[in-house]
Image 1 (cartoon, rainbow, N blue to C red):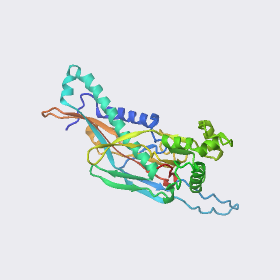
Image 2: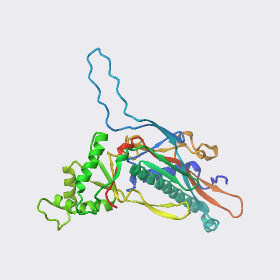
Image 3: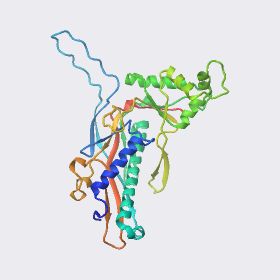
Image 4: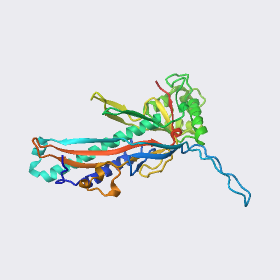
Length: 353
């Protein structure tokens, strides 16, 4: 179908959609963009140095007039891969257009712009879901809609494990569990983790565990009351552990059979240990990785009217036909995927069943 410019130009609609997407990444309480901020590429592949972060060999002192020692680059090499495409089409059906015909330009334009923002939300939601999957598993799985492949970023095998005693067991020692996991992360990265990314269910289990209550309240043995958040956070600080960062969020995704299922943004039974996040609006603000947005073929077509400097990122346009029935749709497409350049900057420990 040809592009319809009667109501909004593709370049203008694309600009609106990108603004909406950026706002979601920066301001949404479910956004994980601060850990894997967006970055544009003039390509459909990423090609980056892998193994960034971790312990770095210190520079050596030298005698004056002596040569510099050759350092060892701890990066694992380069990671390269294809960035898959995603998008959505939202129709404006014949009956809806007829109902809007009395004030066609204004009403249809508003309807188109609303659908464009809806598409931005749908694409941002899928990309954010992949961020959560990547932070938890250091691996991405693509399935359905004629695709079936995994992208494994090579995290240490011992950076994903299940506790011997889960926190549902009153004899478990949650503080010791966190100290051990944080120590493992510190041995690899040279500092303590500063973020415990988790669910409300895990946080509640920790705060209500009898051993935590007893330790937080004091040595009185009084476990009849639940410790206050300030008391538990003070206990965590005593062991150089950060407070829990709870990220809510559920996502409705379509399965291969066409039905929908609800997935949580991050695991509900585990803690993901990370370093300090970056700035969701600033590319390369964290060494953990990035979310790369490539150039779609649609962006390069002259009839879309998008400047070459703006090719990378989501693009959106309105399509129409001259047949019966009259059919109009708002369509958005992007090439986007989060990438871990430092897979050992994440550690997942399962604490609940």
